[in-house]
Each structure stands twice: as structure tokens, then as C-alpha cells.
Amino acid sequence: MDGIYLKIYNLAKPYLNTRDNDVHTKICYSFAVRLINAEGGQRQIVFPAIILHDVGWSQIPRELHNKAFGPGKDKDEKLNRIHEVEGAKIAKKILQDINYDQSLIEKITDIVLGHDSREEPLSLDDAIVKDSDKLWRFSKIGMKVSMRRFGLDAPSYILYLDRHLHKWFFTESGRQTAEHQLHLRSKPA
Picture: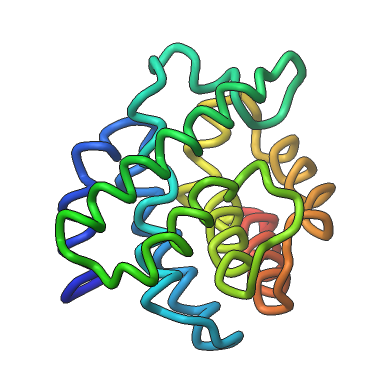
């Protein structure tokens, strides 16, 4: 991450100080770079969107975070939606504060506004952000964080990921990356 994207990340940092979002964002960004290189897409939209997609969690009390997503029952999807709405507001402010290209701000905030709740991507850029975000769950660190967060052991979490793998991804390279990451996590230590 460098240049304008590092500047955006540094402005987003205070909002990423929850839910392991600082680490989450960096890993998602690395997956976004990989998917952009494989699928195409517009860096000037995808990179700010992936950096800013979870800034809205900063507006939800920490004790409610695990009630908004993940494996298990009794999830409150309203909380997940709140993080998207608040995130879009924060993203817009950050981008306006640095005089980011005005014609791109709306596209970026639209992606942030539905990155979890929108069932179908608005564009290839949105698909790349959605896939990069989901790939976190398949990463070594993401898996450790998620298992701790939801009280699952590795076999249970791997089974959860495997059950969702073909439902979650919109790009071929996203799906292939998830399969590869799942294969790596499934190997005995």
C-alpha cells in the first residue's frame, strides 16, 4: 500500500481500531491486489473501497459486533446494515477531505454501502471488494481470529467455510483463491 491509498488507510486507521479491522483491512487489500491483477477492475475504486469498507464498525458498540455476522443463529442483520450505512458516511468524508476524484466517491461509497448486505455486485469493482473481504475468512490470520471470535475449532470452521465457498464468490479468481487457501488450512500441522 502506498501513495494515495496509504494516505486513505492512515485516515481510516482510527475507525479500524476494532474487530481486528486494522489487520483485516491489510489482508483484504492484499487479496484485492491479487484479484485486480487477475480480473481487471479499477484500482482507483477498488483500493479505497476495500480500505474503507469496514470503518462503520467503529460506530457500533464492541459487545454487539459478534451478533451481526458469522456462523451461528440469532444474528441481528440490522447491526451489519448499520456498519455499512455508517461506513459509507465515514468513507465519503475521508475521500472528500483529501479531494479524491469526485466522480469516483459515489461509486466507492455505493460499494461500501452494500458490501455485505447486497446479494449481487453492482460491478466488477464491487465483486472484487466483496470477494477480497470474504477471502479474509480463508487466510491464516482470518481463520484464527474467526475461530476465537466464534468459539469454533479448526475442523468446524473449515467445514463452515467449505459449505459457503461456492455461494460467496463472484469472481473466478476469488473462488480459486478461496479454494487454495482452504486447502492450505485443511492440511494437518
